[in-house]
Length: 416
Ligand SMILES: C=CC1=C(C)c2cc3[nH]c(cc4nc(cc5[nH]c(cc1n2)c(C)c5CCC(=O)O)C(CCC(=O)O)=C4C)c(C)c3C=C
Ligand SMILES: [Fe+2]
Image (cartoon, rainbow, N blue to C red):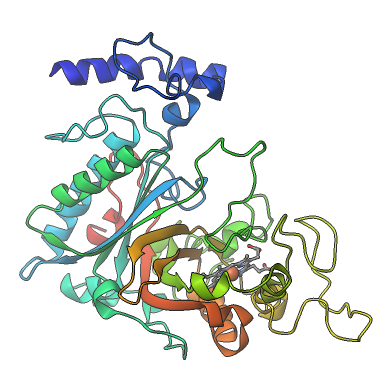
């Protein structure tokens, strides 16, 4: 064991105590304005570093886990000649790597990038794309839910940054921990799979607002208010595939998907130069909610229901007919709903000089035909927001249930 590993483990030994006592965030990182070195007096690990998510469980982590400040989405294709055996070995390696990193332990042949940091709420989530099943001879096991998404009129999709045999979502509350996990996953792919595309995103850092609050996107809106909540009576039914025979299931789901979910991934560019030219009132009419606090234009606070029938003194609807929050509401889409868990992205400047920035939109549902598809169909026809966004890449992935101890993710598909 190297000295670095020893010091990392020593540091991790403080994790339990730090987490339990709930350290003041003021202790993080030492004084501002000078570089903090190892010679400075030690402080225990801050809550943000010491918090960890569990790799094992009924569902994979990274679906209902709190949104993290740093993320990587990466798709892989199996190499020519790699089939079911190689895919099973790959999922075994990836699961072992994820379990270690999420516990704050180093990977095999560790790069050292995350040494000294705690788990930092790292999650690593694995999914299978439609093409995975033909490549591995498992076409009979492919869920119909992975049938291609319909083409939408506003789509400007780049196939080189879309789909893929395998998909990995990485999230962490530290940029180095997230990058370290990305490299470890890529390295563990070995000779079996090659990166097809990779995207990097971010959200607010934990602790930067006076109270915990719904995140903002790069248009400045509070985004996520009306997400289904784990405490909702129908949350599990909406988000996760039920076990066969539970009586509550989506039809046609294979047994290996029990406890799993479907991720729709869209890289949605925001046309920020155009958006930022709109005055505040017009920006709020596009969404149907106030920008400052996310409250409906019909009044109340962030969590007050929209009054979709309310008209103003001139007789026009207060929440316009084409407002995004109206068109996407479950009440307008036969109950269709999804759990939105996005990252923002900023990839510098596009060739035309505008910011290449927007939303890595990731949404989770038990069946895309009862979640993303009907809602996007409706948005595609008449959403006021569509003038200011462009869907540039797309992916649909079956994300199996979580692994029990001693099991790897996808084992129920690959070695039933
Ligand atoms: C097909 C699904 C959706 C896409 C694509 C989408 C893109 C998108 N949305 C925002 C900003 C906001 N969306 C809000 C609400 C909202 N959006 C969707 C679906 C998609 N959005 C749903 C299902 C909902 C909830 C509707 C409801 O339950 O009533 C909001 C309002 C606040 C909130 O509830 O989260 C904002 C703001 C952007 C910027 C965007 C693409 C870049
Ligand atoms: Fe939305």
